[in-house]
Image 1 (cartoon, helix red, strand yellow):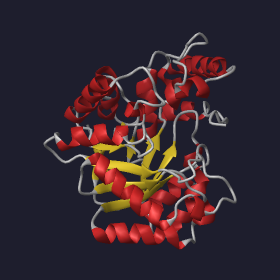
Image 2: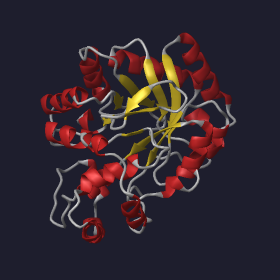
Image 3: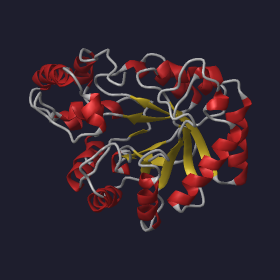
Amino acid sequence: MNYRELGRTNLEVSEIGYGAWGIGGKQWLGGNDDESGAALRRAIELGVNLIDTALAYGDGHSERLVGQIVRAAGRAIFVATKVPPRNRLWPARPGVGIEQVFPYDYLMRSAEESLRNLGLERIDLLQLHVWNDEWTGREEWRRAFEDLRNSGKVRAFGVSLSEHDPDSGLEVIRTGLIDAVQVIYNVFDQAPEANLFPLCMREKIGVLARVPLDEGGLSGKITEQTAFPAGDFREWYFRGDRKKQVVEHVKALERDLEGADLPETALRFCLSHPAVSSVIPGMRTVRHAESNAGASDRGALPAEMLAMLKHHAWDRNFYE
C-alpha cells in the first residue's frame, strides 16, 4: 500500500481507502456485520488507514461498526464521516437556505452524535454530506467548523460534492476554510479533471474520489439480467434500461483494455491523477478488500492507456 498527503492536513492516507456506505445495512442489502467486519479488518491488515463513513449510513450503524473495529485496530486509522442534511434531501436543492439544511446547532449536535457512534475522541475529517455554493458566504458552517476545530473534536473539514457537479465546490475551496472535497470520479465521469482538480492542487486541498467503480457498473459484473434485492439502492440506480446501457459501455471499454482487469484499471485510473489523495471503493467482502487494496501496488496507468480511457467518458446522471 502506498500513501499520499491529504491536502494540507499533514495526514498520510492510504491510496485505497474504505468506503463504508455499503456496510450501513440499510440501502445496500445482502451483507451482514460479520462479513463486513471481516472485510474492514482485512483492509486494515493490508494497509488501509482511511475509512469514510457517514451518520446517515444505516442511521449510524456504519459509524458504530467502524468505530468498533478502529478502536481494536492497534494502530492509527483515520476516520472521515459526514453530517447529513437536516432536511434529508440529496443532493442539495437550489434556493433552499442553509438554515433548513445545516444550521449551527444542528451541525454541532450531529458531530457529537457521530463521536458517540464511533466511540472516538476526535473525528479526523468531518464533511458536509451535501453542498450548495449559495451557502459559501454564510456564517453557520463557518462558525461550526471553527468551534469544532478549537474544541479538538474535529481535525479537518470538507464537503461532499453533488453527483456529477464537481464545479459546485470551487467557491468553497477558494475560502480557504476547508481541507478536502469528496467527489465522484471514475472512468465514466472524468469531469473533475477540468476545473476542480487543478484548483485543489493549487490550493492544496485533499481529494477523496468516490464511486470509482460506478456503483458496480465498472466491476464488469453487471448484466442485463442482474437482479438486486428489493429496496437495494442499486435496484433504483440501475433501473429501466440502464443495465443495458452499462453493458454496452463496459463491452466497448473491455475491448480496448485487451484483457486488463477492469476493476483494477478503474481504481488505478483514479490514482493516476495527482490531485487524488485516496480512492474510497466499497468493499463488503474479504475478496474485494484484497483485490481493491492491491491496486495501489500496481501504480499509475501508462500514458497510452490513460489517453485511451479519455474516450470512454460518459456524460449521464443515474442519480436523477
